Length: 94
Image 1 (tube, rainbow, N blue to C red):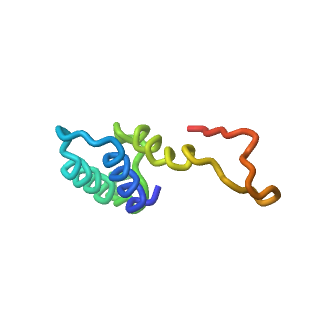
Image 2 (cartoon, rainbow, N blue to C red):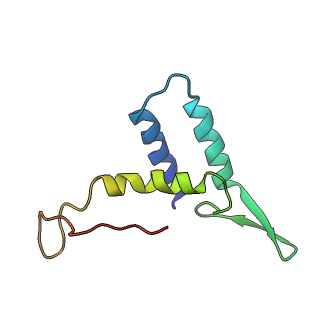
């Protein structure tokens, strides 16, 4: 998942369901920190993950669901062979 796109989608999700008691800016800032500064150790070496989120993060499944929500909310309006039609079925796999 592209980090900038992920943060944009999360911000839009917060805006679509406003909650005055939720510190949205702080949550977005902390999320960005954990996505961009995701270092880990493997075989005695330290690495920095540059793209996406580690599946070991507690929030990773929820983040993936929120990231995919805009895609599943508006299925394709056109297909290559039938402009204006929608898919016969839609499935996701995690």
